[in-house]
Image 1: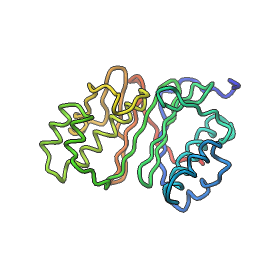
Image 2: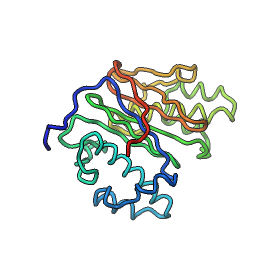
Image 3: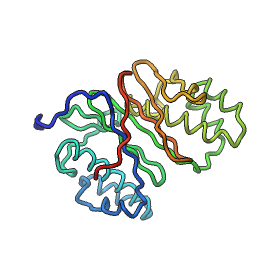
Image 4: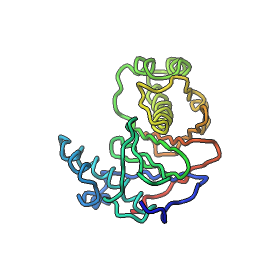
Length: 229
């Protein structure tokens, strides 16, 4: 890949969150925006709404990356590492995609490994404490147990999105990820935490939506930008 579009190191990462169910997102249905492989995967979904959400989330990612690189969205060489983490071949840009319900979230950075997670309330998680005990830090589980049943889901999603963003930046999944990550201070109102050489920041969202972004190092901030499609 030509290096003439390679950006330099940036002290901020860019976050975009968009509604894949909105009528204004209908143009993302164009099949020519996706790769052949993504079109095949989209066709495997059962139900039009699941297929549409997948297509629009991934089309949005490609359009945002195309804006950064100047390359046609469908031609972007998005590859997958052995860990399962996607990357842009031949580029020092890093990116990550998350989608939950009607929302998709994208983070793009340069010179940082990045991860993002968004979760929409209302998934009706059964046995939150049981799930938490299997994936979260002991202090996080203790904090959840001290809350009323009504307060557990919002707190769990705040903890979950922080951990998931960090693990996605690392390039590993929840099951295989290190257990020493502890986001309990976020429940006390902190907006950012550090773990090893990583920083995780909460992203302000609308009620019932939780999001977090992670990147390597500590000298960075995020820019929340409307999608430039």
